[in-house]
Length: 195
Image 1 (cartoon, rainbow, N blue to C red):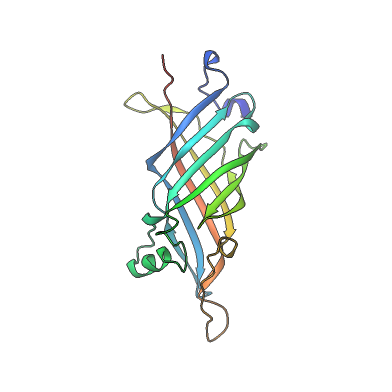
Image 2 (image 1 turned 90 degrees about the vertical axis):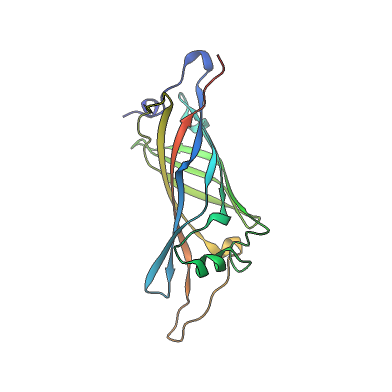
């Protein structure tokens, strides 16, 4: 499937770019981090919102802007969630939002993308590279809306963003690993153009 066939639904009279809004009810930002050197803790940050601009003729000109409400963090363990929201980690009272804004989109031969952008956590901005799966074709939902999905994966070193809390283990190693795997899953709604 060619790059241009993956980015569809663009009408010539509107130019080559279509705008898609992230549906917070059908979006998630999940993470996985090593715990006690023997297993992983998995969780989700809060609601995801934002928009994607897809250029049908030049995917490299596409862009993404997204934000996540870190106050909604959930690892299914209330005490751990409270600690992760504290100044030891996300400090959500002062920094409730995690944000991402793309700086580069590189189409891949398999139809996927390498998406690079600025990720901001706790007021600290660092570059993040995500691997985006090939986009499935757009579909109409039962209410006449045009939808499509997107999945992206990457990883960060939490210390780069000031998430430095840890505790040494008696046998060696630490309670929390430094590398955090990230997966973003979103459903996109095509923004209706004025008639």
